[in-house]
Length: 93
Figure 1 (cartoon, rainbow, N blue to C red):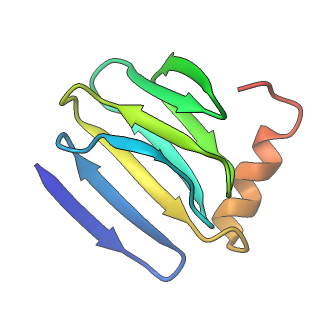
Figure 2: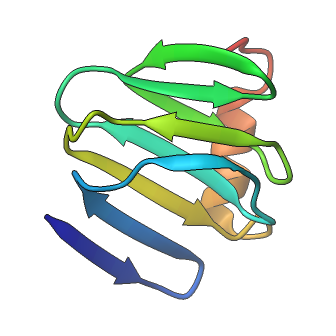
Figure 3: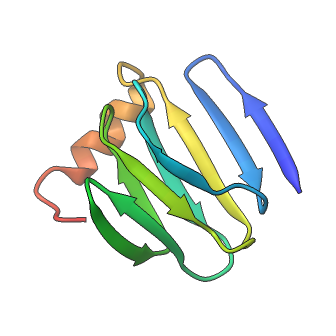
């Protein structure tokens, strides 16, 4: 399944068909696994998690193993990005 939703400040993809080699974005990227954990590499460190927020210009790669997940590219100056960054402050996740 591949569904893409566009809005003014973000692009959201609901899919079970996407893995990505090492790359980075000018936008923040939020990953949420809807079926168990996924494997993601952020700044050369590999993690197994159900959700993660990757800051802009940070290299990452991910492997979902065909599990349904949500991936959101978020404009860094948007109110959503500001709220997510505020929640992330002081957390090592």
